[in-house]
Amino acid sequence: MIEYRNHRVAILGGGSVGSQVAHLLISQGEELAARAGAGLEVVGIAVRNLDAKRDTDLPADLFTTDAEALILGADIVVELIGGIEPARTYILQALNSGADVITANKAVLATHGPELFEAAEQVGAQLYYEAAVGGAIPIIRPLRDSLAGDRVSRILGIVNGTTNFILDRMDTEGDSLEDALAEATRLGYAEADPTADVEGYDAAQKAAILASLAFHTTVPLGAVYREGMTSVTHEQVVAARKAGYVVKLLAICERVTDADGLEGVAARVHPALVPLGHPLAAVHGANNAVFVEAEAAGSLMFYGAGAGGIQTASAVLGDLVSAARRHVAGGPGVAESTHANLPVLPMSSVTTRYQITLTVLDEPGVLATIATMFSDRGVSVEGVSQSVRDGGDNERPTATLVIITHEASESALAATVEDLSSTSVVSAVVSVLRVEGL
Ligand code: NDP
Ligand code: HSE
Image 1 (cartoon, rainbow, N blue to C red):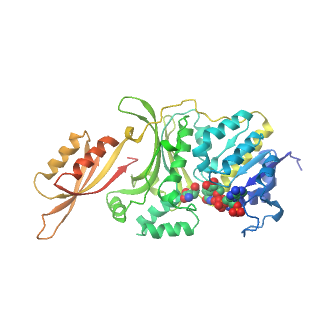
Image 2: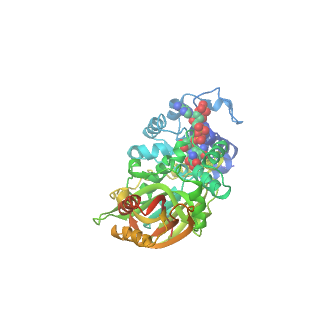
């Protein structure tokens, strides 16, 4: 039997992910050692409350509340506590002591990433975070390593399982948002405070991480435009399918050029219409998918379980094996690449296509009036469909108009919608949705 040098692994957090990481490390220790070229010994699991009831057969003597002592005695620290503090402090302590750190914590990376990467670089350690975006899906390593020779132009991601589950249920089962969210919570997909899911905060954190990595530029969380999905109605979901789309909460990271010709990057999270033929439209339930457009590689899609204790543990273990291999090979960790340092541009510099649904008076000249409003704002209309003639005998007849635009800027579209809202021929602006992936 080969004798491997043991690496002491401290696990901070023994919840859904932490307990599964510990369990797999213990039960598959020999196989992992053979792959890593080094033993990976769990020296302890830090938790908040030693008396908490745990659904696990892990040895009780591994658990401790003394995270700091655990960190000081470790070669590799796995942070699976979540949130900002004390996770940030523990990660810094671990890196400053020379340990490599593995984290699944999107919140701390999106808010303190530069500080943490800098601390790692200072001591030649490495910070790994494959599990922070897309759970089990390998997306960080492909962006950092496999696509390092390419130029990523755009990422369209379904990176929040809870909201995909809700929108999918609204579409396929006719569930209400509230019922679908209750089910997502019951199944353990949602965050402790599901506002983070439904209002897009979780997806925005993931967008900041993906954009920073893909464009070799620090993209701060505050620069990510965010709209949640709580305003999406059952009617919109039904109308979308009739028109050949599905509604998804997307995280979009892309290279953009603003009206003055300044080239930069932008990141945004919002509900969007995705054509039924696009691969992202086939992402059901709580699954995640990241669709990457790169100049040489073309389109690539990474798909799978975006959450779940054991699924996320798979990504953490991949990072653990990488860290151990690096220790065996020697040499400093790979620093985060931010060399491009591109300007991070606001939402107003983004251009995309839109679907605008209006209730209008069904009378001669109305269509021409509306078309003029679009053209006056420089928004080009790609298609118009008119459906159901509503209204009773005593009312002026109305119709529903669904207008799809060519690419237009956010500001031009907003101005057009304002014009439409104030004209007498439009009874209501029923919905405005961005269309992505055409
Ligand atoms: P849990 O809430 O299930 O577990 C958190 C663990 O951290 C618990 O064991 C808790 O202790 C411990 N803990 C909390 N505060 C402290 C503290 N101050 N000191 C020591 N230990 C503490 O979280 P998850 O396992 O679900 O998530 C862990 C990380 O993984 C998060 O960053 C999350 O965003 C990320 N992630 C999770 C996914 C999932 O599907 N669950 C998917 C992708 C990423 P105690 O048990 O005593 O309460
Ligand atoms: N609440 C998150 C989701 C968990 O629904 O995707 C994974 O980050």
